[in-house]
Length: 174
Image (cartoon, rainbow, N blue to C red; front, side, top):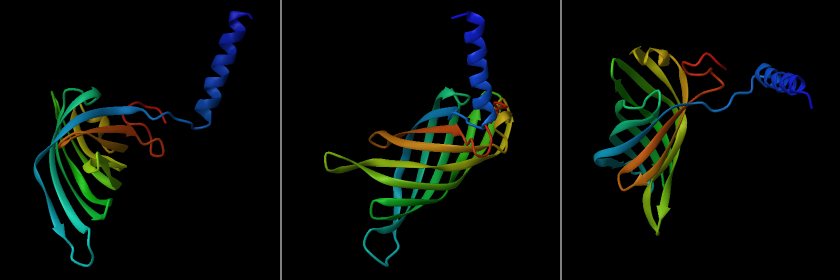
C-alpha cells in the first residue's frame, strides 16, 4: 500500500479516537511509600471488625512528574472486616522548586492476604490537587485517580493517573 494512504488512515483513526473523548490513563506519577510508626486502630464497638484506622506515611517519587518528589501524608479509613472506605487522606508533595497539596475525594480498600496473613491493603479512588506551585503548578486543581498496592512489610506503591472524566493533569488533553 501507498505510504501516504497508510498515514492518512492512521491520522484519521487518531482523529476519530480523539474526537470521541477516549483517553488513556495517563500516569501523573508513582511513589514508593513507607508507613511511619504503627497504624492507629480504634474499634467502633458496634460489631467485631468495625474500626477506624489512621496511617501516616512518607513517599519518594519514582516516576512521572513526581519523580524525585517527597510526599508526606496520612489517611483515616473505616474498616468493616477486610473492606475499607477512606474518609480522608492527603498530604504535601515537595519537589525541587515546587509544592502541592493533594486531597482524597473518595476511596475504597481491601486487605491483601499473603501466606494466610494480612500483607497490606489495595486501595483505589479519586482525589484532587487542591494547591500547587512552582515546578508542580500544572497540578493545581486537577482531578486524579489513585491506586495503591503493598510492596513489602509496611511499604506500598502509590500511583496517580489523570482522571479522564475530569480532564488530564497538566497535559492539555482530555
